[in-house]
Amino acid sequence: MESGQTRAAVPTYLGWSIFNTICCCLPLGIAAIFCSCKAQNANAVGESTEAASASKTAKTLNVVGLVLGIIMIIIIIAVKATK
Image (cartoon, rainbow, N blue to C red; front, side, top):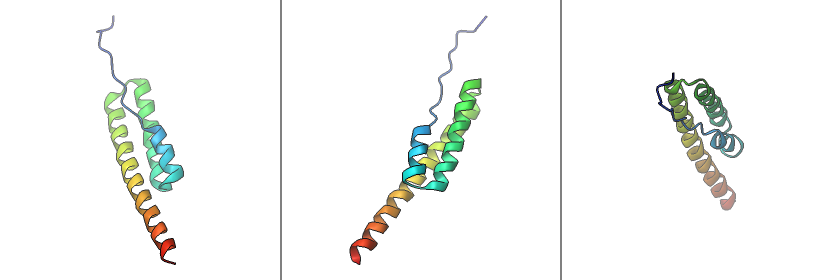
């Protein structure tokens, strides 16, 4: 008999991780994909604490990767514009 509690699945950020891998920062994007998959697997087996930890790590990697990607694009545009 179940206790009636439903577990909310934590977000995995897999789409954002794939976007970051392709468009922004390859190394951080790959690490974010790894953490996103880990969060997805932990969600599937009901390990909410592990899923939350992996989800938080994926989100952090995605934010850092996106910021670094934007900074790199700005630097490249500035260098190209000054030539």
